[in-house]
Image 1: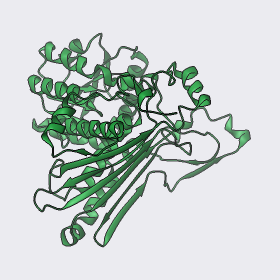
Image 2: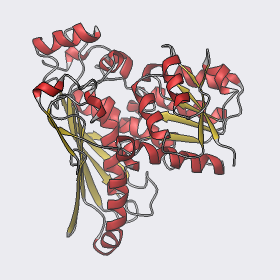
Image 3: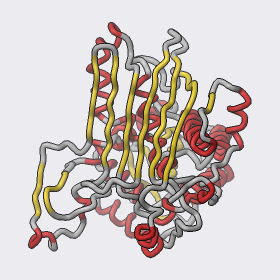
Length: 411
């Protein structure tokens, strides 16, 4: 069977991570790439690793006619623009991939989804954490227990690190908010999935309500605010975003009427080894727990040897130190689910269908994210069973996303 030809939009950090994942996937060829920032170095790296010709194209529309699948890995604020270019290209695509989140707000997410339906290609919403082996194995291992005792009643998901790599991630008007938009979408998805009974589709459980709280706890302080301004040119004295968020989503099983809850916590304040994902779940008589910082491999680097370490992130994504006892994950793309989400998309697109998580699902994750922002902004529980409340979310744009975060955040 001929390999599926990927065309990638964007040449930033996440694209580099996906290329590392694709080294472990058969049946996909990186045929092209286009980006507003010059992608030639990344393209050369892809070719050197045997991932494909990775031709550099001047535009999305030009590339779309030469590939089978377009992968949207560029910044959030141009997602709609990219989809409009694809819709106007006339390309006959076999698949569309979009990295999380689908868009900055619900109106944009619906526009992205509508354009995908206009294009007529199957879709894959890339939420890597649902594909993590530790999540999948836990569900498989507990399937019989859950069948006998009942599904999980409480799921908790945390994602924390010291902050993003690029300036646009820190700019709430471009990214769509702060850490809740950046990483809250991960935790919302994982919590929903963990609570869903085996064999049911990802959207089986009905979201009932959302309650959330946000804060600017570290990066609004003068020292750190200045560091952010010096490093990225982003001024949190004028347009701040949250660096901490927590909340609870209540779900209802339409088959049984049973309610369950998913708790999430995310932050850009975690100054330990690097990126940490915590997941746990509690059911009647059983439980699961996972921590991605636990590894059977340990490395120690003393002060004198530390100067030889060029890149701390060789050890762990968002690593904050290059000496001492380092947390090492030998295969992060596989650990975090990137490898398996590509395999899932490949298998689906070869059959002419959408992936396990499609753009419709991505819209619902944006809806939950917007409900969390509104809950925190208005200091109340958002009732998702209220049709008027749902209608209001369709046009809602958080104050933080508007660049008016100073009205709701206190450094």
